[in-house]
Length: 423
Ligand code: AMP
Ligand code: GLY
Image (tube, rainbow, N blue to C red; front, side):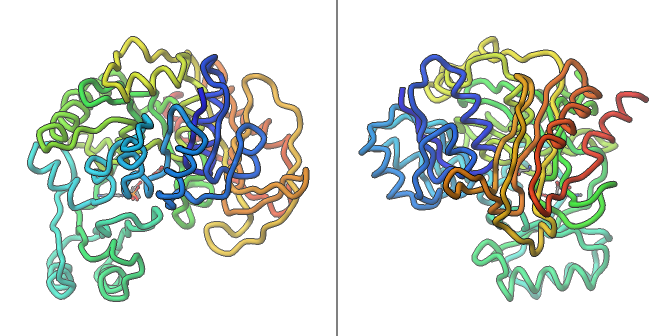
């Protein structure tokens, strides 16, 4: 089969490497892909948001199946447009992708169907929002309604910070129309868990749980980033917690979307916080997480393409999705300075890797035969092992096999997870 993957980051590289293990896969096209993905798939310079061009490409190349990975094309209705041309897709339609595309929508959904989440108030009027900030407790959480490149959540420690955030979002429109509405949400505490799931709208099959490391610096200090590393499984996510989440969150969410006439098919990502009052939803994503996918998919034993196609057809069964024992770790290697200013264009050298080691490339381009840095997060150094401790050690071993000028990475990926295991 000829497969199209829309997107061009480390997540897409992990998806492509996983798809390539399937006997059914003959060829993979990536739009736009990146310099590292180009070693595994045919890349063309069409952006993930150029929906009409993507559809035209898919028709012209007669692709048999498409995987739409990033949030923006899903929210823009890329799956609807491809399916109109008879191309089956992995990913939700526009009407279901709204679960990530609008935080006001998802908050209202959770309230309506009794799905546990933080209390919040919605505002469309900045003056009313600022008035409310005078009465609320701190820290408080301010969220822009729409997509904001992962930057639309601000944790304000005091009134001044909160007022600035509201003005930035609603008046100065730093996130554009995404800030027409905002949520002001209760600040929750507890360990965070990412649970990606396959769902065809009838059953929901959670993948191995994972833990992201969002802050730029060791010890969870520094600025928020797209994610500096991940481990799977997440040791805080015990069988007991998993059962509770299935009953109170996962199944009710799928049913709620059905009742709203917005059946969700694809990967539904539950961003959870295990609060003292039980697990609560922090966010939904309508797609695979990045860099969660880089640790989850290497642990998948089943054929990813078969699972994806069963999901699209509404024929998903829990027994189709099998996992390997053991653990995985991803250490993101970034350009020094990320998430702020950084330099690019440095050659990346990668030593030879064993079967349980991987490099998933995110921000790099090919210059002749040389792979050169071209983004903030450059790549993920990934390893699997029989236990978390060894997976962490091996992933840092992969880091040691990689060199490029100005490389920066956290030295403590998995440390918190490991200390929890050793408790
Ligand atoms: P998001 O952009 O929705 O992934 O949110 C970014 C991060 O903000 C989350 O991973 C949490 O660490 C934090 N966050 C979001 N909502 C809350 C909340 N209600 N309380 C505390 N932290 C939150
Ligand atoms: N790692 C968080 C996300 O993909 O949104």
